[in-house]
Image 1 (tube, one colour):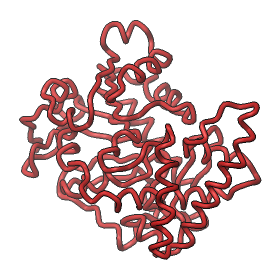
Image 2: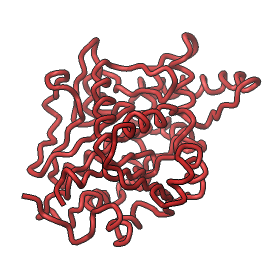
Image 3: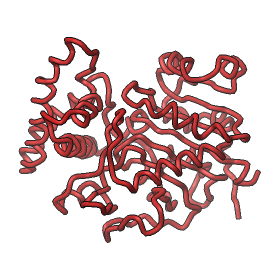
Image 4: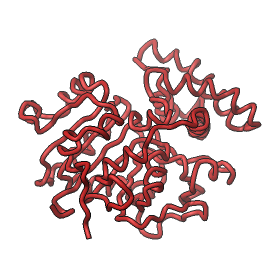
Length: 339
């Protein structure tokens, strides 16, 4: 099968990075981790980040008064991020961005023994070893701020593009992500801990540590009705829509379709309205029942009943070992070589 007829689009949520010890955004997981990292930041003498974490915690306590009228999950850091971006008072969004990035950095340092993303990503690309090229065409649309995916691609020597228009961003000398394999798209719709905006310019660094050493704040975008961010991100969203237009399969991994991110529905609608090649949509999540309930509000009943849209209970590790699912997404363990 040629790459033109073998295009997998993967949509990644926070669950994708869970094996790398990255906390989920909802359920209080991220907020609890942020509170835990405060002492660590102080021990590391990273006082600017510690102050930002303290401000976010205080803002959360004050913002609870909004719950008198509105249902808000104050243990969900993205709820607070959205609230801070919608409000002109109370909290500088830069403090939220810095606190989120610091929490992810702490989570990475806290657990040195991370998930086997070398294997996970290799399975999604149809690469059982580094001797293989990725199967077909692969696009990752991710809502995650971390660089777990990029690090795995780097280990696999697979080059990737962030989807920016040519010459619209600057790549810092710390950014070394050139591989020898076919390039894949990594479209980060909510920004990334290794991106920095300075005025109208966006600079891509190798890691958050490099951004921090530069004295900047990473470019993270809240999943809110009020999308704010650099103009360079417009091209990333446009590229995401184009990729959905040509997708043969859509595979959603660890994305809970949170109410804070209302753009997901319209992103899919914009991409699918001209798609004549889509054969299936597959949601992969340990809590498939909960995801299916949300999916029924998004997709047509006939497509769910026919199996064109399906929901499978699986972890990322189980997915990498499942010959049945890998075959269904066109990435069997045997792999294929495209010249």
